[in-house]
View 1: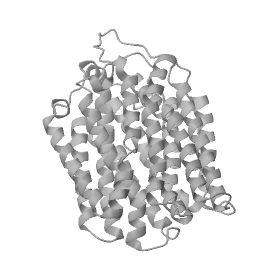
View 2: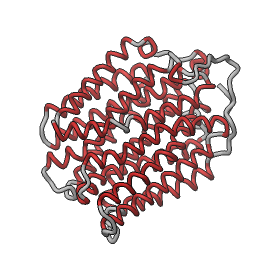
View 3: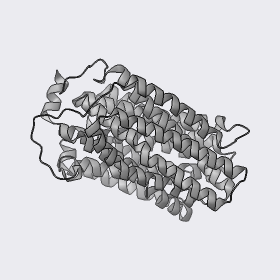
View 4: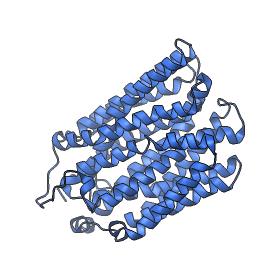
Length: 421
């Protein structure tokens, strides 16, 4: 492993890791807070559930397209500049979305104009916000190996889960006069400014990462690497399933409780907080205490998500929905750091930027189609999406046993050596 100032338990400089943690936390708070209020925004403005889902899908498409681009740029210029670019994109998007919602509730424009404005402004987050996620994972890979890298990626995943707890929990309390539903977005943008300043100060200036002396077979794309591809395929499937569960949750809560959208906000927030807490338990509790490596994370993650989706189908009522969503979130909380760390450990040093870009691309691509299809299927048959998701998780569980890369828990020998030192 390349030399670095190791001072934290994750193998990273403490202040640098704190800045990465804060970046992940702030963007997660803003994004999940926005997701939690959008069903109410859409139904209050008369915009269909399908169109609300499509707003996030376009942003996710931009995320999928631009993540590899930013990751490649960070390979050439260093990670810090692109972490700052991503935070800038987050701030701009939150401010813009808040202004659009404010114009809609005034009302200063009709639903069509509001929808188009929201679509364009939200997509800017996918274009620029993706820079920070790709650069942050590559930064972690530059400074850690083996089990340390698994812990570091899981800790950042825990920041994401913590953000998904705080975002929906805070959003209902931030709906304040005189700006109403747009107020949470303005608060999240202000938080983004604070984190941008922290990252600018705390992250040391860095240049292009050093490359190891090992020869690497070039395939033109990290997806062409047979050691890495199974982790990415698993990751895309699981991430798509998680997006479908998350983006249908608000509509499920409204319908199961039979409440007006505004009155259901607290219940939606509670359900999202419970799920995020389960994900946090997985990433900061189970992984840290049990020392789980990718193979175990992938298997347990798929199995628990399968069980949770089946319970959503079988059990009625709001309480059962919250419990089942928590179980799926526990599974996804294990699976996501499992495939991210597994792909990183399977790739050579020269491929870490490409892996980070691919993982970021998966995070965006998984939200492009699956939420739209899930919401559309939910409107036709409320149990339909979760039967399909359960089938996908069963398939991934089988894939974990049949794919050599996933079944054998391969980790490069140099990663093992550096972990044992």
